[in-house]
Image 1 (cartoon, rainbow, N blue to C red):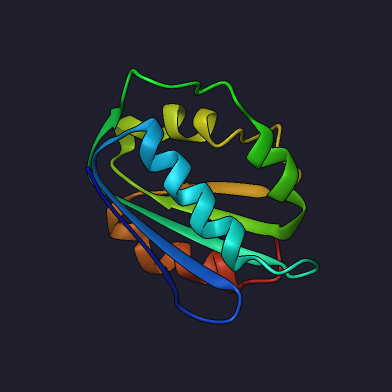
Image 2: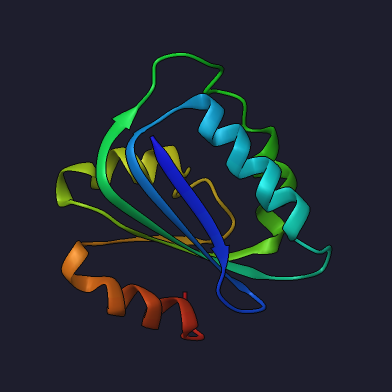
Length: 122
């Protein structure tokens, strides 16, 4: 698994995920995000799942503590991945249970994902 997280602008974080996403990766993302989100700040997250091949089997994937704690600071989440992962990724992100919008885009729609993140609409 390879994961990178970068801050592209004051409120835009970009995460690139390759291979199998493990529980340890999830904890690293949470640690990194938690230390970079300022209270009262609204962020947008672009997830680029390149060569993504699913989730690891180990770990407490049902722990939603981070989501509930930091969700008020997340304005939008855009995910770019192969279409076969759409339902599973949106379910993993808690789309429909989150207070904020989460949208899925195909690899050829990366610019559309960026445009959607920067738009005022959800």
